[in-house]
Length: 371
Ligand SMILES: *Cc1c(COP(=O)(O)O)cnc(C)c1O
Image (cartoon, rainbow, N blue to C red):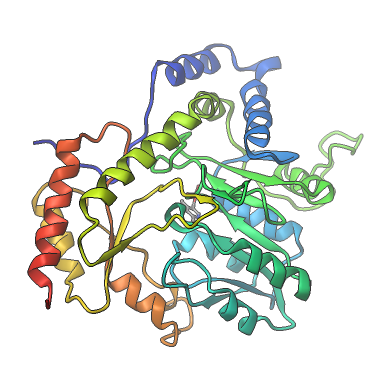
């Protein structure tokens, strides 16, 4: 029985061929060939006007927030349960992440808590689509429109998720994606900034080129201090191949999730939801134990590790970390984070391997059950 990873990229002969071509030929006049192709194909896939390839999602968020004018003393609202990468870019700009509680079912931002957290310093709301689950975008966009605050989508975990006909990442002022090796689509490291807003696009394009505007006739003349978050042509070559295979990559995640969901359906747990009118790309299948069941998360993670399976805890509430103010009032965040684990998901995980995971979850929850 082999080791079960929690995530693994799906790399075929196509990725290898494109990468080899970029390594051999993607220089000189062709040095942006795969980058431009990836940006155009990605914008088309998402149904947005503009896309800028970046070295990471963190970089895309950093430049996008800077282009929106987020600065010292400003506040940026996001959900407490998150990977730190969603909160860090605001801090780079001297702004303060305001961490609000999540909903029971989606594990994403609670719009009523967002509304209550808005102040006259709020400059952005970051909607993170956690583990492929979609935020309540109608409610968030409504708050944003009424209060004059841009809503941003961190869709790093949600390529393939669709909200009422619109793709995750295409609905906000801008969207940010990650192509880290653990994500549904990968370039090793990498990301994408997307927007429909022409002026925001121009600003981020200038920022991404070390502050050099494409309209600036002088050579090596930055107009502002910019950033260096570019994707290389080599990485973009792998990305072009992955994007050609995107429907297959998403279908894989959905198939792995469906098998878990079917075999865990009688347990007192909740898994990633897929409400009517949405498609969940199920980046990371996750199990949250019901409140009335006794559940030892750490014991389950240890049991995974003992069985040669990557045990992965749900993200911690960021407000429990030393660098952010404590927010014990975010009770849903605290409870869910402590009672949840992620399950392994990748293209060639076998049914037998999924059964090993299922048996452990089942035995563990049954063992701990108070019923
Ligand atoms: C992975 C991830 C990021 C960070 O992506 P990088 O490309 O590593 O910067 C940001 N936000 C979310 C929600 C993520 O899952």
